[in-house]
Image (cartoon, rainbow, N blue to C red; front, side):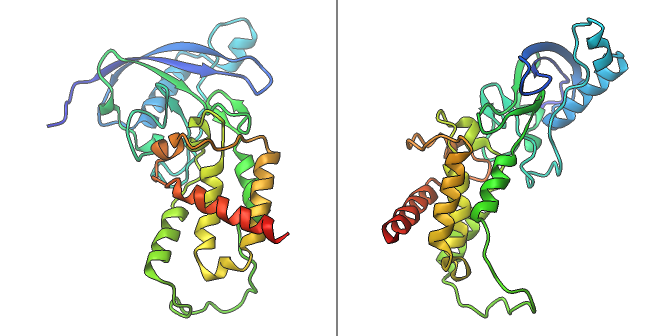
Length: 265
């Protein structure tokens, strides 16, 4: 039976005005948090508390210590969009497995706990404000090659092109990546190889994406390097923290795709 005890927590939250300013931790107290609340609902309660206390950015400019409501990213709150990217107590998305931050519930914490909340830390993800980071780099990698070129028109039948179930399943596993960036934040090298390999693999396994496979692998890897992401050294930390359990086997496929493409040059 789940505990119904309300939680009183200490939050150490990273506050930063923008990417150019130096950041710092601020400590807050939140009380009577339901263990059935999601982590983001707890953050909403904190911000409501800060607003009621009339702590706002204007006060900061006048010399007050506090920095107003905490900025954090979110959208669907269903584990689909990948927007809720928080580093909680030293783990991407917090102390649970195969979940995003919005799916993390407060029952994973104990009354009296101190929770440290940080943004993703990577050269490829500059801080916009507080816990919000700019993940435009992922969009640029996708623009470089994460697509198939087709003529628009009528929609073909779903079974018009027979695809082996094993390939279709593996492609869908790769396509489950939500682009949250946990792999980059967790990797000691700040590598985006798991994200890139998932996008390449999901298309390389299908006949529609096979045609442009060589161009796609070269273009996406080149863009990844250009944007400052690190190299993969097979620590597999990305796989362990990925909320969708995308396998590092896709990185092996990306490497094969890339090497074959280079050999053809």
